[in-house]
Image 1 (cartoon, one colour):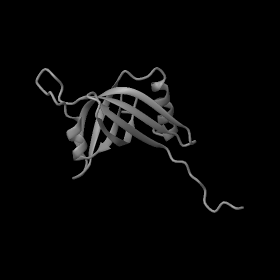
Image 2: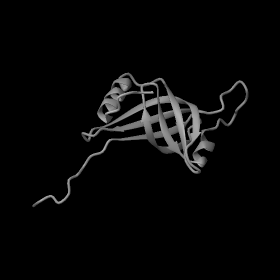
Image 3: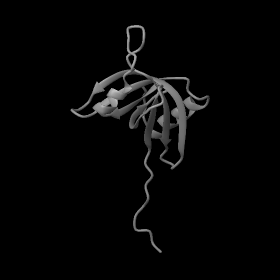
Image 4: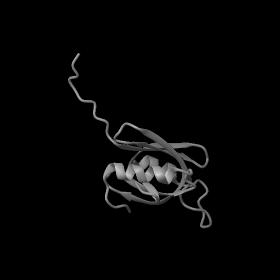
Length: 128
């Protein structure tokens, strides 16, 4: 039996977000990660779900999110990290897509080490 195609494993970043009220926000495609936070791509409908229901001047505009970050390494290894995060900024990148930058607060103990491994594995020479 001869293999006709090489099975290439590619590195990927996936972010699942759950709002503090318990409603699942969305499965997001991560675009960047650093020890400080993660950036993910989402749509206009998902942006509406990020807003806090009880927004006042004393309360933040966006909800705190519980994130499950899935890091897929080029070697085929897959790790899941859990943390909470706060939305720091949202930037429109096209008519239908937005980049959401979220800062970590409460990363699991070995999370930063795994993020550093992921960055090295991706070949990125500098971080945010």
